[in-house]
Image 1 (spheres, rainbow, N blue to C red):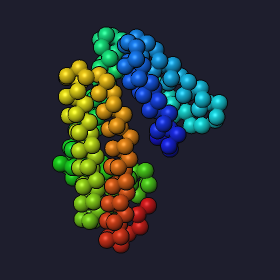
Image 2: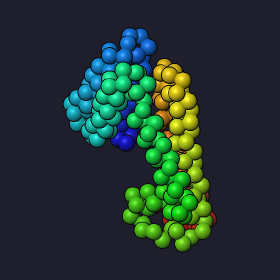
Image 3: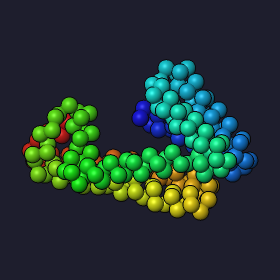
Image 4: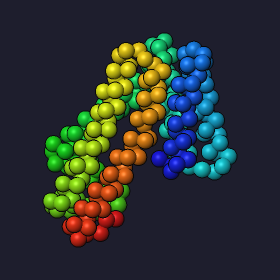
Length: 192
């Protein structure tokens, strides 16, 4: 995600959209969010920082702006995030049900450790709990933001999107790291 600066970079256009939509109207909010996304990308180019977070953020803002423009409703801006959260939540839940918890698959995929962790009951349990937490994070976003979407509470929807974005992701990530390290200590294996 590009570290803290990447997190901030990808959050700026959404924050700009929320504020501009409250102060002005949909069309100026869309333009402001797109301009903010481009400005973040240019800033990162000038500073020679990784572009991936800015490009991903710009793509996401572009898609959200397109949907909001086509529907004529500010809440359309948040629809891609709702759909993404629903898809991730479902994927994480299914991975637990088939006993391939995605927290373990991702952790060991990134570290190149293979799939031996699945034979260790302590590790499988830790990754299952971590994956269930991620499922809960995505599900809570869908439920709360979905209710706000249905109620056409676009300002509160934007605030919820920001509040439930990186803060919840950070907490889930910290819990995942804690659970994995604890399980590895219990199992007597190194936590890479």
